[in-house]
Structures are given as C-alpha cells and as structure tokens.
Length: 524
Image (tube, rainbow, N blue to C red; front, top):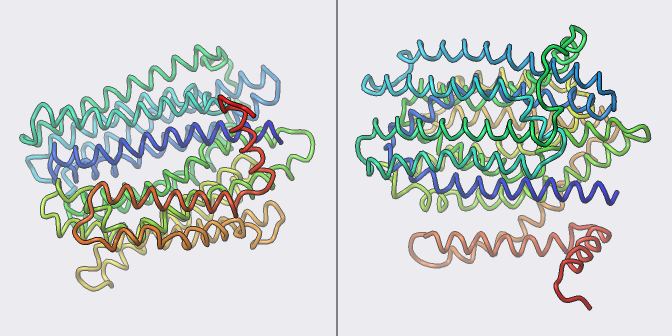
C-alpha cells in the first residue's frame, strides 16, 4: 500500500506540475495570439483545429489504445509475447497514419465549403497541411512515445508534453514580435510554422528519449504476427471507438458553430472551450496514467479485482477534490475571468465577453462530467471492460449533434448560439456522468451510490468556501488580474485547509506529516 501511495504521489505531482505549466501557457498565449492574428484569424485557427481534430482524435485514440495490450504484455514477463504485441502496435500506428493522412487531404479539398473569407482560404489550406504533417509524425511514433507512459515514467512524459504546449506560446510571441499586431494573415502563417515545427521537434526528442531509456521501445516490425495484430486491433477498436466518440463531440460542435455563426462563432466557442477545458485539465492531473496503473494491478495474481475497486473509489475521491472547487469558482466568476482574460484583445469586448460567458456557462457542466468520467473509463479500460461501456459513449456522441441542431431551431433568437454547447453538455451529463457510473457499479459489483458517495464531501466543502471569494466582489470597479488572483488564492487556501481537516483520512494525514518532517532541514 505504501509503495502504491508513493507511485500515486509521483504520478499526481508530475501531472499537476505539467498541468499547471500548461494552464499558465494557455492563459498567456490566448490574448497574445488574439492580438497577433486578430479575432477572425483566431476563429480560423479554432475552426481548422476543430475540423482536423477529427483526424487528430484517431491519433490519440490509437495511442491510448496501446496501453492495455502493450502494458499487459510488458508486465507478463514474457519477452517474446511483448515483442510480438509491441511490433503489432507499431504496425497499427503506421496503418492509421496513412488513413488519417487521407482524411486530412479530404479536409484540404473541402476547405471552400466552410464559411471562410476568400482571402483566408490559402492560409486555411496551409494550416491543414501543417496539421497533417504533425499528425503523420505523431501517429507513426505513437507506440514509442506511449511506452514512456506504460512504464509509468510520468515525470518524463509531463516534461515533453509541457514543451509541446509551449510551442503555441512561442509561435504566438513570434507572430506578435515580427508583425506587431498587423498583417494578420502573414502573422497567422508564421505562428503555424513555428508552432508545428517546434511540436514535431519535441516529439522527435521524446521518441529518442524512449529509445535511450529502454531498448525494448525500439520498433522491430518483423516480430509482428497475425495473432498479435488481431489481438491489438481487437482491443484497440473498442477503446478507439469510445475515446473517439467522446473527443469528437467538441470538434463536431465547433463545425456546427461555423455553419450557424461563421468564424465569429468559432472564435467565441474556441475561447469558451478553452476556459471550460481548464476544469478538465485541472482534474486530469488525477486521471492521466490511471489506465497504466490499472493494467499493472490487473496483472497481479492475488485479489487484483478488489484492489482495483479500492483504487477506483480512492481515485474518484481525489478527482472530486480537484473538480469541485474549480467548477464552483468558475461558475460564480466566469464573467470576471473572461473580462480579465480577453477584454483587451478581442474586437467589440462587451459583446464578445457576453457571448463567451453564455457559452462557457453551459460548457462547464459538460466538461465537468467528462472530467469525472475520464477517471471511471480509464479504470474500466485498464481492467479490460472497454467493451461494456464503449457502446454507451458512442450513443451519446451520435445524439450530441442531433440535440445541437434541434436546439438551434427551437431556442429563441440570441440564445440559440448556445445550442452546440448545450448539445455537448446534455450528452456528457446523461451518458458520461450518469451512464458510465452505472457500468462501473455493475462491473465491480457495488451499489451505485458507492460510486458517487466519494464526491459528496468535496462538493460540500467547495460550496462552504464560496463566501471567501465573494468578499472580493464587494469592492468597487472592474476586476483586474490582482483581485482575480487574490480571490483564487484565498479560496484555494481555505478549501485546501478544510480538505486537510475533513477530507483526508487519519492515516493519509499522518503519512503527509511524516513525509514533510523527513524533508525539513531541522528535525526535532
């Protein structure tokens, strides 16, 4: 248990170090990019990323789908089994790289069908080609890069992911410095060139690092067998369907925003998606790597199922501890956050902040539901139950755009701009926050209330602490960075203190206190 706790602390610490860095990079890069390329070009970036994201999802689903089979083979101790499975995984990645390249070319030729100004059409096509090159390399090298995660080297994994996210900031700064907020189209091209070039360089470095730390990660395609290929594809297809169905929803909604509201709608939805997505990013510090841990627990010879059940309950509690304060705070202060974040860089700030606030207020609940379900689906996948929950996720993905279109034609004017966001949220709450826990309860033979009960106390504590940031609203005038930061810090401090008092178990508190004392320079 102590060893598992240490591993968990390393995983969570690495994840949150990465996520905090990525959060800061994201907060800084958005206003810089808006100033460098303008609102319309920013909307074009959001549209292209959303459209080509349909192909990028294939990449990510294949990469994550390797975790179970490759991890199981690695922990089995059978070197021949591992070589065959790992070679098959690499073959699958190469085949998927070809398929996704075809998908990208489809978007390239379909670019004129989107609501894009004629003067931006060439830039849009160039962005698609850049995304295709990046995706091709990412997919071809997915297996070695995922090997870092499978072996639970979370520090290295986090380091490379932060470097990849930093490419957005570097590209935005380069565009702003060179063109000084003018010549938006040229600035857009420079941003994309720098960002994609740096991203591909970081991916190459991560592959070389995987080869260096473990020679097993070097692909040997000749070891691939038909049996191994069938086994990898058999597991991967269900996980790919589940992950793809979850991820594709926000991309489809971005396309619907373009159809309904043009590039302005894409820009506002992109801003709202980023802010709401930070909720999931905060919680992902608990989620990332859970599937790899569950695969290792499943490989145990004694009481593996029971340890996975205990791990799931503990993980759900930690996810709720991270989610509830972020959700409560942003629901209450979304307007102030958006004002501080984008009002100085968007065109028509009053209208843009109001529109983004409408969208983000709806998206919050959908992103929160997805954040919690990431925990449950990762554990179900790692325990080999992907076939039991994947159909449910697929159904939700199909209903999302149907709901969005229906709401667009039924909501009154001025409110129908939230229709894609509302379709996303309804789907996520119904199928991910309610449907997935039902599957968890059945797979682990436990009451449904036991799945939800670890979330109750963190929610109560998050609500109890809300008067603290509300005190900062008493002051006159517009919110600035200082007031926003102080309100967040005060809320976080009080919430953390109460969690230490009422959420941590006695043995957990004792372990933390002991760990802190061991690291003090002066000991009693």
